[in-house]
Length: 308
Image 1 (cartoon, rainbow, N blue to C red):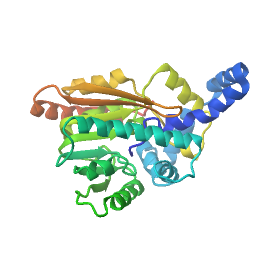
Image 2 (image 1 turned 135 degrees about the vertical axis):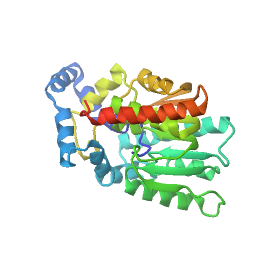
Image 3 (image 1 turned 180 degrees about the vertical axis):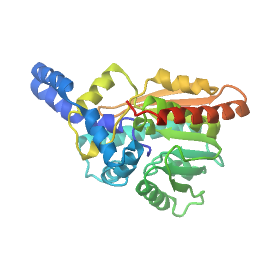
Image 4 (image 1 turned 90 degrees about the horizontal axis):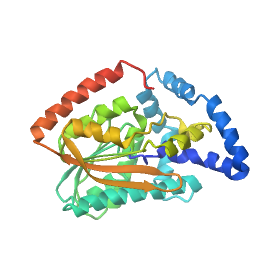
């Protein structure tokens, strides 16, 4: 879903944990250690998915059409009604968007090119791409998000002769088409590694020239930070969050004939996003058929077992 900051869940996690550590020093850290052992966030996430009929993606969809939309619309907007953590996420997300736009500008611009913004959110990437002249197919699992993205494009494009993006409410499994560039910013945080492998290969099969991905990186530090945050559940952290090792993401790309050519990292106090650009390493016909076949096989296998 949505161009969520790679640390959309991870980012908001730290506020309570940081406050405890700042207030209590070593004793607070020790208390957190005990709590980490005792807490059972996985059970809480499973209960939420169960409420959506056992379908984790349906749980994500429900969240981002409801309380999640209200929260992230505010974070991705210009209102002053945000707290310290939300403002930090907003600023970090803007840095990631600027890095993506910088990459495409360096490589000849976007005028007339076709882009898929998979997980467009409120249009943080879709709108500036379209204003630059790109033809964008924007999608998100949340209809509320796509409707908001369309409104933001209309407001930004007034008086400008630019292509109007298409906005579709659809999950990553459902999107199709062929594009010069496929972008998927921070959506992988909602997918366990096996399903993320399938999604990466599916997205690669849709792209002619370039695939841009970002995700919450799996490192010891971010893993602990995420775990601390899970001790403080709330309506804003209602979906399961998955971190991904960069090596795993790159392996998935390599398996379908893509190679990583650019890497960036955005890290603020509460926002952490690893950004990769990949390009074809061999003939497109070979990698497209391979990517599609791998996607179907992995998705079938992943659907037969519960996420970890």
